[in-house]
Amino acid sequence: MQKLINVLALVSFTVSAGIVAGGTYVYLEKDSLIESAKERVSEEIQGIIGGALGGELNSSMPGDDVPTTLPAPVPNVPF
Image (cartoon, rainbow, N blue to C red; front, side, top):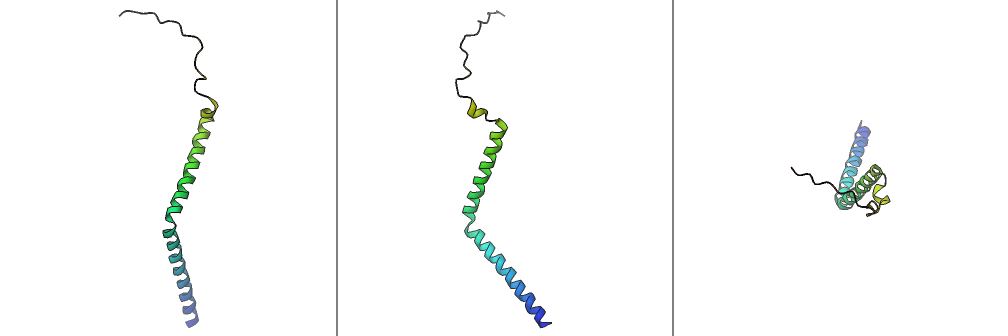
């Protein structure tokens, strides 16, 4: 019975030490973890938006849709 209690105590200590070590790592590296997550989310959102637009932003240059002729004059209708 004593051996079983010693094994359970050792397992409990190992689990507790792992939780403390993991919490310490996360606490010390929280800024870099947050920045990494922000970069990943930003890249994913850019990919989604770029795919939704179908590359329309890159394919057309400003001024490509400027008409070369003037439209017909609109008649002046008095009211």
